[in-house]
Image (cartoon, helix red, strand yellow):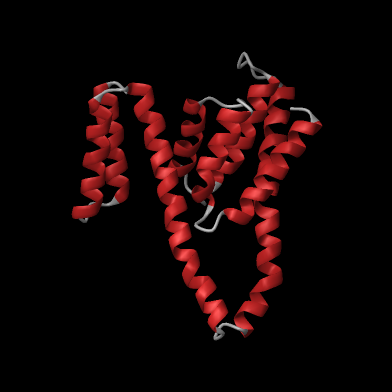
Length: 195
């Protein structure tokens, strides 16, 4: 990854940082558009794998941002997939640039506005602003779910995956089954069904 590409990655993730009202997952559709459709640094499968890996790992759910930067840099530096010390360094640089781009703008905005918002929390405009963010966050998160499911359905184009996704949704909505158990059952079903 050259310096221009690193700067492009930084500025794109910095702009997404200010849009991530519902958290990092809420801007996944635009990350997909940028990394998979526009720049073609990642394939759809690599993109979904980065999100899945980061969500399965302990820690904050935004770890996938670092993986996106790392995978992008690795794909550009060693397209054949052969790792060297230089490609590992490029991957680390990509991860750091993506995380810095995603964390800096929203962190600076939060630091500069928190005191003012707290002092004026009773004003009608501040309350309306906070109330208006909830539907935006929900819509952005639903668009992420739609994008990830649509990407996977395109890959397999058959009914077993849809059945597993529907079963997981129904288990989540209508039972008190722990989410980790649902994820584990989905992984088991995927392994048994071969996807």
